[in-house]
Length: 93
Image 1 (cartoon, rainbow, N blue to C red):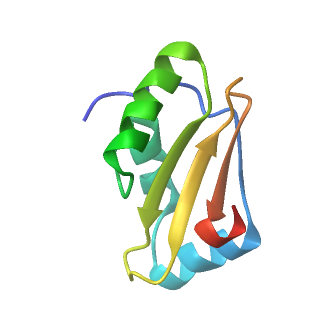
Image 2: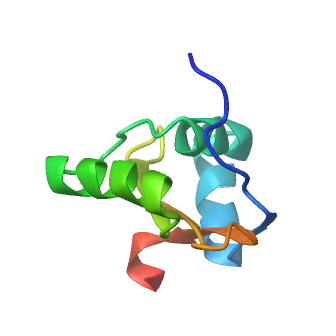
Image 3: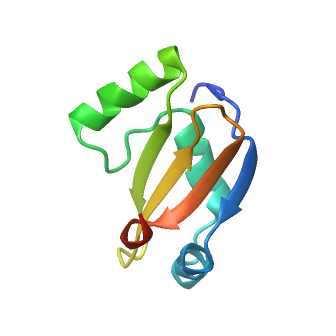
């Protein structure tokens, strides 16, 4: 595994995302590590390519993952200025 590719800034999560993680028994840290290393997760090729461009150009970075129980889809989004990262349910986007 490679190291972090960008700073997360202030990390926040919606109550619904935290509930989904807790229900699945998942550790939020695992998803943040995947996000920081541009793990493709559930992203399509176009979004993977967009993240690579975003890393180079300083744009917003988006990751998508499904919880281990398969019941929730999560987005992890780091703002372009790298000041914050939000963990939300896909349905909240």
